[in-house]
Length: 81
Image (tube, rainbow, N blue to C red; front, side, top):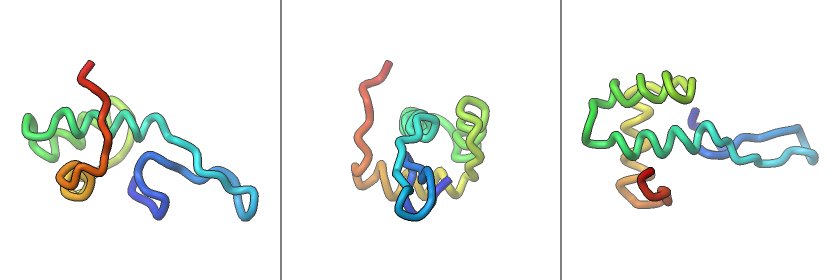
């Protein structure tokens, strides 16, 4: 899930034709992780992300995301729905 281009984006194409494309499933995962922070265990959050967005993410991946993106407020989150 975490790659050189980061969470939210994926590379489409190769070489000079390669483009960064927003990945809506990963954006939904970001919002899910952020909303569940402090309400569930890291393993629980990883399971919810797997169920809802079908993205495999370990509890350590959730922890790393929270430490890097949410704790440093680098991620802009939409208002609660």
